[in-house]
Image 1 (spheres, rainbow, N blue to C red):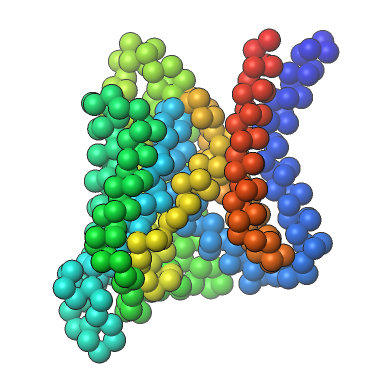
Image 2 (cartoon, rainbow, N blue to C red; image 1 turned 180 degrees about the horizontal axis):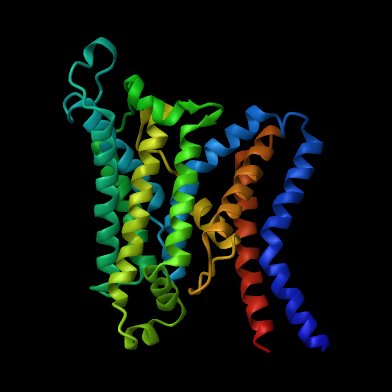
Length: 332
């Protein structure tokens, strides 16, 4: 009975530990800084979370099928620059601003360009993994370098900025008091939750992540499922890149630096196992909010960005270690 109680305790601690830690963080930061819970700061945190949070939604699909995508930060930069080039009317006019920017395309063409590159890169990553049998870590590590290099070529080392009002409204506008990026994020949270929990496709993702060989023998096209998760991630990277460039009124090759670490950490801390088959969207959202709150609180307390990276790295290691420990204990 005592062993059973210990297993149950570990299960529930593992299940609710991100939420408990998030609540504790909010309490601590609200006590240490009086403006932490100010509505303006809360909306600012949510706007910041929405960019990486969208990518985390896609990463959840990838990690559930035992994959990983280290290229999301570099791909974010490339997608944002391609969208900016489309908005400006081409490579020749990409640096034109103000009165000189005569040739511009509507914002939705920029969105299509940004998302299109994300979809293409996601498909390329997935096909290299499934057809060439190259490990996901190697493929996406190569993508991390290749996409950043491509972004530097597109940008020629400089930022592309100066978009029209309609373009900027996607990243800076509000409906009531709620920022547009937050609304977009909430819509896709609902959609992704429904897909993973209530559709056949979602069940196939969990099956492939839990036991790929058993899923294949059951008639599931495992290669297609795995590739599709990278395409989904590419879509969210492209969408996030567009929103980020609209929010900053600029796209540049250094965008997305370190995003891969933060996104993967949010997904894993939210309860999605790096060993596949386990995870959900709601946990990912808690993880994303947790890191958003952590970074915002540390900034308000004037903690160095270098220290912030150390803290994020330590939390990621501890989350994976706890996941392995709790699983091994429950199997005893």
